[in-house]
Length: 246
Ligand SMILES: Nc1ncnc2c1ncn2[C@@H]1O[C@H](COP(=O)(O)OP(=O)(O)OP(=O)(O)O)[C@@H](O)[C@H]1O
Image (cartoon, rainbow, N blue to C red; front, top):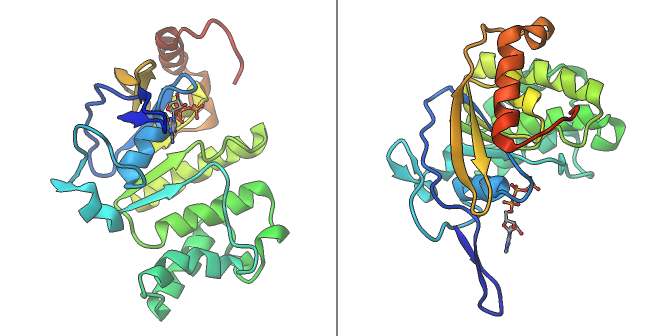
């Protein structure tokens, strides 16, 4: 992917991003800030057109597969004048499929994330973590095959973030979507994923594809396992992280 500025200057931000994701697989992406992770998700979601190479979803180009892809952003971006149920149903309205069945499914999803009793509430009545759960429901309501998540828990405090990780693991185990999850937290990336893709920068490229074979469902104790610490240390080493608590 090369961005071209108005003055004609070009900036190649991704080169050599070659990977596959299996149906139902959970893949985390970590890398230095500015390495091109958001650019990569935007290309896969069809928001941005890549200048070279191709992205295929079950053999079809992204543009033909847009219905099968949903994205969750760092901020929940809920519409303040719609209640939570109406926010979750928005993608179905765009598709003119806001049927009784879709409504029932939206309510089921809210139930699944523990917000069944908040369907009629508005986003300003919810905490940040709750709002992000509503936005995850909105992404899932159209039964996408692929869920793209760009730092979805980056704005949350550490305790809520932990809770959201458990929540996401549970949702993923129940719905079995393919998930591509971008995060700055290496422990979060390892704890959630079947594989961690490490993106090197300038230009962004995949420098490692690491399998995470920790048993599922993962618990709090998984974070204290030697294998977990080894994997985190390996990714830190690849990214040149000297020390840090994240
Ligand atoms: N619309 C754009 N036009 C020109 N350059 C861009 C544009 N969007 C991003 N870039 C550049 O592409 C590079 C990668 O940005 P991107 O946001 O994809 O990185 P990132 O890995 O997601 O960063 P972070 O971890 O900080 O969110 C950066 O150098 C950025 O300045």
